Length: 184
Image (cartoon, rainbow, N blue to C red; front, side, top):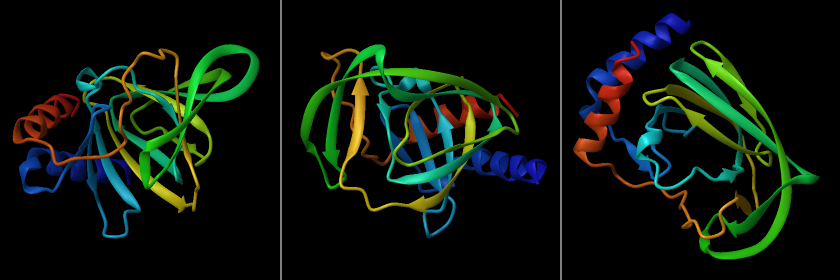
């Protein structure tokens, strides 16, 4: 199945301008693969990230499979001897209205390569770092009704990095997918 997925993904990337991509400023080009938003193709361009990717949670559990490239995922837990982070909590429907406090966190880090999978629970804080051009397929397992989402940052002066997506430019789509195709 992995070989089949890789062939299909390569075909999508080779014809990238034929698809309705979305882009997030964390350096993520995303394509929904079904109408229920259960599966999505992620093409990572960390060199295009605005600032440092934040530690965050999600409104869904998911499994992510690395199609090509490499991804390092850090999971964070509260720890009184951990590093101090600015924690911002917000409603998914209004990320501009945030409550702020501090939390001390420590992390465990794992690295995943082509063919590997990892799972993430909705309320588990994490961040990830990818090699440029890494491609993953995410399977959203269970959406959860959450009252708030969380973002944590070490640098209090760093600008808020919105989780909202936008339509990417043609140059973004071609540049990011071209970089990913070098891994095939």
